[in-house]
Length: 122
Image (cartoon, rainbow, N blue to C red; front, side):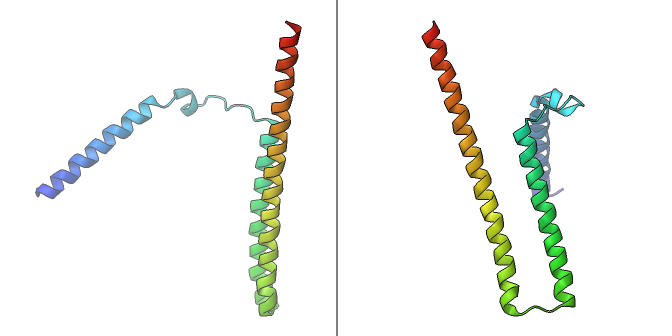
């Protein structure tokens, strides 16, 4: 074998050893049929909203391709409609981010209030 081939083989063997070591350190409970952690209601809501967003985007672009084949649109609407969809999607993401930030701040305030009440009672 050529020297380059031997170097490639040794590099691949080293990479395989390193990846095997990394996998051996991975927690087994995550790998083998352990029950997954229970999701909170807000996490479930976010996942459902994301799924709804993806399905609606897929449906929109599928219908877009079918409609433009059957009913040709002017160039103006071919630009306006996707821009409106993009704008509404970005608005949804911004609103969701704002909601999460407000809820996190509310939770932090409640936790701080409970801690301060607990210290006063001691």
